[in-house]
Image (cartoon, rainbow, N blue to C red; front, side):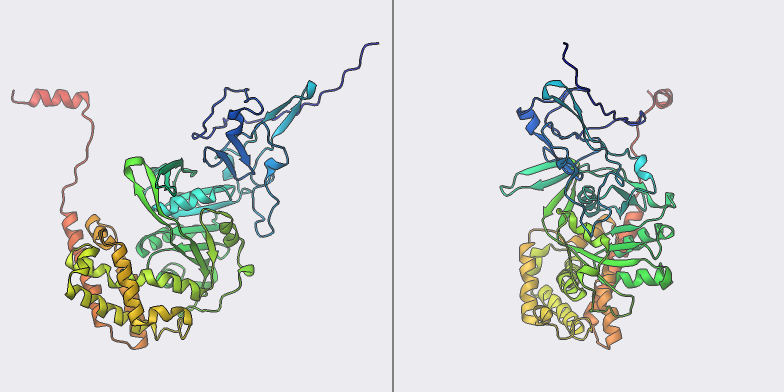
Length: 489
């Protein structure tokens, strides 16, 4: 009697013809279609999938159509359980991920079909959760890269001209060795070209002028159901945003304020975003009032937006009450208000300030006026956390300690004025001028420096606009023939 054959169950996985899966460029092993590494080989150990958010392929983040390891269990490939504060985390219903399918064959062999993501076109569906990053600086690219492992779709927006330069992230290990990894970010698009609603938005700009121009470009896409995390240098930006852009309180979005201690810079030589320093991302919420409230709700009552940002481990996000956030923000604002204008006035690097007694006297005068304003501000009051900033001797030591650490660098304000970048003086010295006027405090040195910075910037702008712009182009055959015919030889 012939032995009965066992039925074989096959599961077919259909992928649209309009899209072809792409594999991470940083993978160290490439296999032809239909092939897979032998179980237990070195090649199979170099590719491993860690849930739906990230694949470990030589350090590269998971991209569309990523491949799971031949030894990965089906249950493990789905990632950890969905957290209660992240209801929009990757799942088969929201992110469009097709789980790895196991095709059973005889003799205990298995064929693993790779899991795939939705194509970029399909991710534009309204049912797919999306976070928008509005920024044209290095910081915004890093945020988009970090969040790409948390959200189903991350869209980068620009308000002037989209740019897709700087495709790699450059970091340094403990030995000082530079490592490069591809930035897992999509193409940047112009914010004003779409009318789709934005639910969660991160705005990153070094200047308040850039932040307000960015919000003006997306004003038609946000409403009172939108959450906006605003990240700029200086203080008092949110008050002007509410006054000039969202003047109707019932229609304005919910605002969060962010401040990063991470430091980034563009590296043109290696087409990369260079991470200069690791740090944290402090976020707080503020209420609509002339004077910011210091009584903030607890972390447990914050939006899912903040909790999802905390899930991106590269960002090191931390929610803090406003008084702690303000204490964390102030040292940088004081430095930019008391030291940077003096460097611009004297046109010297930081080291030049230490050898000039008149420069040190000017810095001390600026610092004393700033501290006198801080002591009367209701946001600070008698809080012990500000004791170091309100004590003049300790404030001087902290300020000069920072100058010593940066003594070999050029002032960032001097670079901005020379390159024609907008200056942020209205939200540095200008912020303390407005608060001093409201509190009845005289700050003549800060007023003088505010005028000088604006005057120097106006002179630099006039000089830059007088230059004749030259555009480099290729010579066509017709242009070459015309030149030969009209030449004198």
